[in-house]
Amino acid sequence: MSVKARQVDMNSRGAACFLAAVILCTPAAAGDCMMYEAGPQAIEGSISILEAYDAADRPETALILTPFSPTCLDAKDPDDKVLEVKMLHIYSNDPKIHEQLKGHVGETILVWGLPFPAHTAHHHAPVVMEVTKIPAD
Image (cartoon, rainbow, N blue to C red):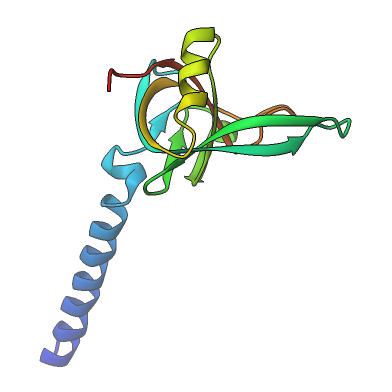
């Protein structure tokens, strides 16, 4: 093998190592993804209200959490994965927590909850989270 051939080979290995490093440092590989069916998880962002419509064209109001940086939702089933999450539709089955969420519209908040992929016309973001806890301010 000539010196020139070795140089090209080393450059190829360097490019492959660089590519591997980039892939390993993406949110999904670094563990920054939320995980479907993995119990309560925390996410921080700002809350807003979205006026939307369901499949029957009836108006609905949704609470939307916009994370500071896009994240993802990982899942065992590839159909449940969401590669880039820029907003979550949040709600709570606990009336007290739901009222707290509404009280934080326009603010930054940390919430704990159970994320899952949207699957009905009533879900107004690619990922929905049932908020189960809001840490004390």
